[in-house]
Length: 559
Image 1 (cartoon, rainbow, N blue to C red):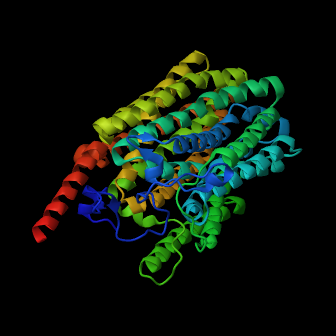
Image 2: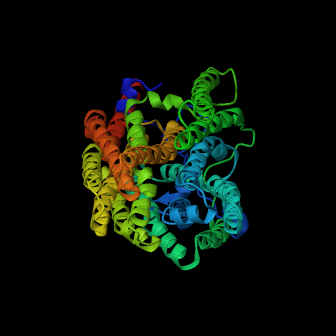
Image 3: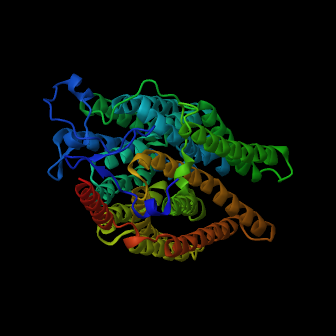
C-alpha cells in the first residue's frame, strides 16, 4: 500500500491556496482531517448539538473551542466508563466464582468476554462512524451498556450475568476508537502526542479506582453492588451524551457493513477462547477441545482472507462496500511494529488482572479490598506516566520513550515472578508500580506513533486494526496464562505439593512467561521502532512543511 517514500513522509498533505490541507479523494471511512469551513452562527439548544464540529470549529488559535472541549470531555468520560467496567470486576472474581459455584476458568469469562466482545466491536467502528453520527453512536452505546448492567445486577444465574457483561462490552466497545479518531480529527500533528497523553491519563485512572472500588464494594455489599453502580453511571452517561455532546464528522446513510465478516470474527476468536477454556477440564483429544480450536482457526483464516479480497475489490472499483477491517494498513512496517507491541502488552498484562487477585485472595487469604489497594499505586503511576509519555513523544520521539517503557515492564514483571508463600504483600504493589509506569510509557506513545506513520485517510482504518488486535490479544492472553498456571499447578500437585504451594508455583511461571514477552517487546523497539527521530511529531511536521515549501516553489517556477 504505502511505498517506502510514503512511510518516510506519512503525514504529507497537499496545500490549497489558503494553506489548508486538501486530499485528492475522499476515503471510505470518515475523514479525520476536516476541511476548514466558513464560520457560521451556532444553533442553540438540543438542535445545535447536531451541528458538526469541523476542525476549524473545534480547534482555534492553539486551543479547543468550548463546544469541542465539552464534547471531548464527555467522550473521554464515557470511554473511561468502559475501561472502569472492564477492570472493576477483577478483584470481585473470586467471590463471584464462589457464589455461583463455578470454576475459576469459567468465571474468568466475565472478564474475557468483555475483551473479546470489544475486539469484535472495534472493526465495526469504521462503518459505524461513517454510517451514523457521533451522537447516535454514543447514545445508543450507553443505552445498551445500561441495559447490560441492569441484567448483570439482577441476574439469578451465571449465564444471565455473562450476557449482561456481553451487553456492557458491546455498548462500550466502539468508544475508544471513536475517541481516538476524534482526537486525530481535531488536533494538529504536533499536538497529538500531548492530547493522546491527556486522554490516556484519564483512561489510566480506570485501573486505579476500578479494582479498588470493586474490592471495597464486594467486601461491603457483595459483587452485585458493582453492577448497581454501573447502572447509575450508565444513566448519567446517557444524559451527558443527550444534553452536551456535539457531532464530529458527517454521516453517510448509504454506507453498508460486511456483517458476514463480523460473524466470522465471532466464530474464529470465540472458538479459540472456548477451546482454551475447556483444556483445563478435558484432554487435548476430546472433541470439546480440538473441534472448537479447528473451527476457530478456520474462522480466523477465512476472516483475514475475506478482508484482503474485499479491500482489493473495493479499491478496484468493483464494489461499493469496503472491507470490515482494512488490513492493508499492516503493509506499513512502522504501523505493524506498533500494533504488535501493543498486542503483546495487552496479552501479557491482561493475565495479571486475574492472576494477582487470585494470588492475593486465594493463596494468601487477604480480602478483595486489600487486593484492590495493592493494585492502586501502580494504576495511579500509569495515569501519570501516560501523560508524560505523550509529552515525551512530541519532544523526543517514540524510540526512547518506548525503550524506557518496555525495560520497566520487563523489570517489574521479572521482580514479580519471584513471589512466594511468604512474600511481603506490598512487594507486589511495588512490582506492579514499576510495571504500570512502563505501560504508561509504552501503550499510548507507541499507538500514537504508529497511527502518525499512516496517511490521514488511513487513520480510521488503522485505529480499528490496532484496537481490534490488542483487544483480542488481551482476551486470549487471560485464558492462556490461566491455563498455563493451572497446568503447572496440577503437575506440582501430583508431585506431592500442597494446593496453595502448587498454585503459587503456577503463578510464578505464568509471570515468567510474561517477562519473556516483555523482553521480546524490548527487541521489537530496538529493531522495529526506527525512522527519522523514530516518529517524533515535531520532526514529522518539519518534514511536511519542507515538502509543502518544495511544492510551492515548484508551482511558482512552473508559472
